Image 1 (spheres, helix red, strand yellow):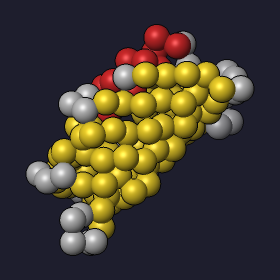
Image 2 (tube, one colour):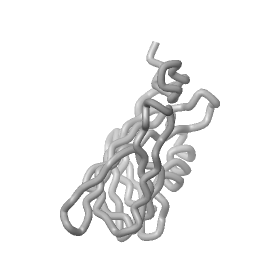
Image 3 (tube, one colour):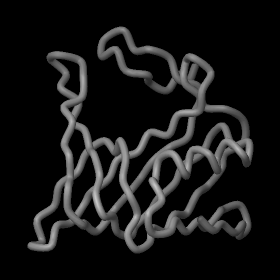
Image 4 (cartoon, helix red, strand yellow):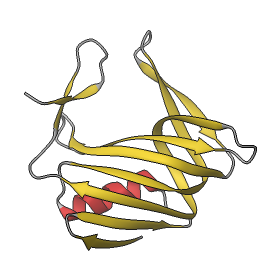
Length: 141
């Protein structure tokens, strides 16, 4: 992974073989960032997405066992109710035949590269369990 600060933003490049979520989370923790937003694009050798099923209040896992383009990735940085850093990421992936799939991004392995622009925010974004969905939602009060 490579990173460079440009003004208020960071430009980040993840390299082949790196797992996106764990690599980015470790770097964000090292920087002491507790709030922010990021955007990315690139390609992955495989990934796992999720679709939140509101009826059963859990994610259906969607394995992606092929090389795909990361057409659009967007996420935010916050602190979960348990005090741990949480990256909430969604992604749209493009297949070789031009079809797309998307959802909550659980993990993905970079191949050959993934480029991210990250904007840290001052302070902390906190999450709390939402009683309706059971999800960790942003607590903005």
